[in-house]
Length: 371
Image 1 (cartoon, rainbow, N blue to C red):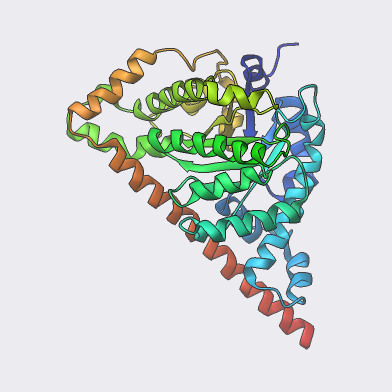
Image 2: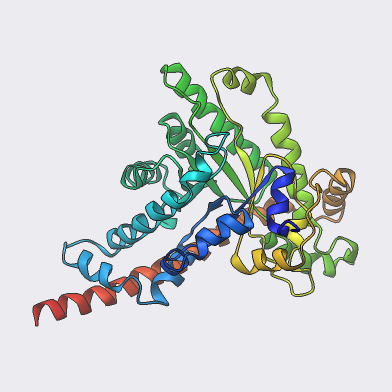
């Protein structure tokens, strides 16, 4: 029997994680099926995913009613719901986590409030709370890779908390994040604590880069670079990854069991209908990386995706693409900073909508309880 297309990606030492979670996918056994048949090896969540899950079904109504009676804030009710889902998903992926290379995969990610993206201390505090509440070794707390997030990442790693660094668009910021991870491990070693169980990924966002850059390329007559900038940036990020995690600095930590912080390709659905729907998966398959895909991208790849080792193909072309941007006066750093700010806002909006929806349900629950 021919191997499933999605499962074949794992032959090239890349892990596919699902960028989606809700109760229905667990209740129906569909998530287990994705693990068994497609070789899905982890799950990521974000405020937009939870907003859709909670607002578009009645699966959470009973829990909202129960939590409403405990005089909890809307945000506390949300995290009460989310933590239950994350625990359950973490238990489903426990066998993946406990495979022959323990801790290579099987992780479930839960994000701190997007309103904390510019708040270092608030991020650290909530990351600790969520880590303690979920209480699973195969969980990662998502922290945005903003300037303010860097110290939070370092502190949380030093405390033994697995971190998924999110909202990365720029190469410079990615390298700073990789160094914050290493610094966190070094801090922990200095206090004689183990580091062999700590895992982290750095989530580099792709399709949103092209959505922003492509119209500018058209204006400047650089049609040949259309749809190329995000993939070129990702390939250069992988070069940085290889350099940073083969350094003497990191090798010292490897003696104590440190694992490299893997690059994770995020925002991998094709936002442009002109592009193939598997574009951001096929171009970036390579060792020691993760691609987190929404359901429709996973299904598209299962149907017609080509799994080949492509990540280090065309590195010269990638460098040339980024050089041509500079020559044309396109400031990619400025654009990626704008993308970071927009990314925070794109998570704040569904998060606020979600809290409002919980507030409405809470009112109903309390009213029915008092009648």
